[in-house]
Amino acid sequence: MTVIESTFGRRMTRATGALELMNDLGEAVAMSGTQPVHMLGGGNPARVPAVEAVYRRRLAEISANDAQFGRFAAAYSAPAGDPGFRAAVAELLEREYGWPLASHNVALTAGSQTAFFALFNLLAGERQGDVPSRILLPLAPEYIGYADLGLTDGLLVSRRARIEESGDGFFKYRVDFDALESIDRVAALCVSRPTNPTGNVLSIDELRRLDAMARDRGVPLIVDAAYGLPFPGLQYAEPECLWNDNVILCLSLSKLGLPATRTGIVIAREEIIEAVTAFNATAALAPASTGPVLVEPLLRTGELLELCRNTIRPYYEGRCREAVDELRAACRDLPLRIHQPEGAFFLWLWFPGLPISNERLYRRLKSRGVFVLSGHHFFPGLDEPWPHAQECLRINYSQPRENVVAGIAIIAEEVRRAFQED
Ligand code: PLP
Image 1 (cartoon, rainbow, N blue to C red):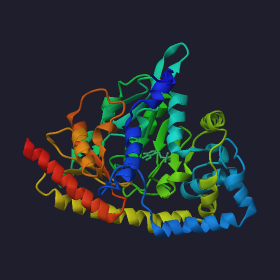
Image 2 (cartoon, rainbow, N blue to C red):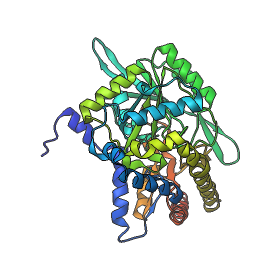
Image 3 (tube, rainbow, N blue to C red):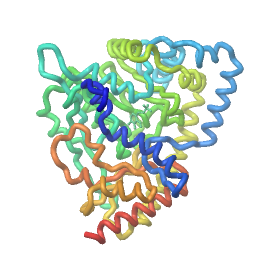
Image 4 (cartoon, rainbow, N blue to C red):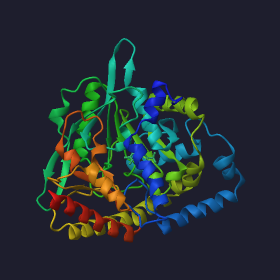
């Protein structure tokens, strides 16, 4: 017996990849009392002491300043989010990239996950007097968190990426533009750049082609830069990014080391910002101001971008190189391919011919205290079977080094066992 009987209730409580991922974070903590746990799942960023020192300093400043403390904790912000922070974001983007932005082009949300929930359902779905429209994800694999956001079925449509192998154990996904042409009922395009789970960074040419395709269809292009430019700047390839009045750029404070502040940032033309603002007012009254008040002066003085360039990015690049070396050494007798790690803090592993499904491998690893994400979750909107989707795993290499090294050793053992059992 359940009282959760509404269509909305059932939709929001079904078993989803995102729920499994977030539950794993809790389970890992519980398991760690009885056995060693190696957390290579989830999307938590690293705790970098030099970065946290800056946030701790800001907290002391806020606590000593009555006006800042008032904004931080004691008042609802405007439904679009803290005005000072929104202006600081617009100024930073104008300064860095020359984009003509003002605070009316910026709205905040409770994490960027909430922005995608709002945007997908504001733009696509059932329409009066017409067939339902959809969000086109131009290439799968794509971010697990998009998968179950639709308030109606069939909200997402995607196509397989083209696989380009470079012969050195790395491969790269590319957009298959021909496959996108015949897709109809598209209300918006959406890509994560850098991509979670793969660490892919779409080239600026690919992005411009998607932008042109969106304009031709008269729909917006959503670019999810949760890991990208200008902050946290975990974009190791392709230094360029894109905004124009047809682009909805989504940023976040999470991967700067502040996921608990739940701060998402939407940069778009006014019509879109007004819709997100109305959604905030209806669903939550206002977004949180803790993250915005903490970070605003760091945006204005340039300290945040310096921190990104000189501390955060080099930290993750170093961790990435180590994880690739560890994996290659641990899997030297196995058919391992790694997606070119061009951004974010994940490695996407492909074991061609893996004799068991990645979901089974995920469960075997979990029973040994190693949390990863099974790749099959990362193909939202793909309605055709693709064996490749059962052969991939995502690991997060941002957690303490000894955990990552021990986790990789167990992954290699379990993959070897799977091939030996075959
Ligand atoms: N977009 C991508 C690609 C992500 O990986 C995540 C979280 O991991 C999000 C958006 C949502 O992040 P948040 O809601 O913490 O801003």
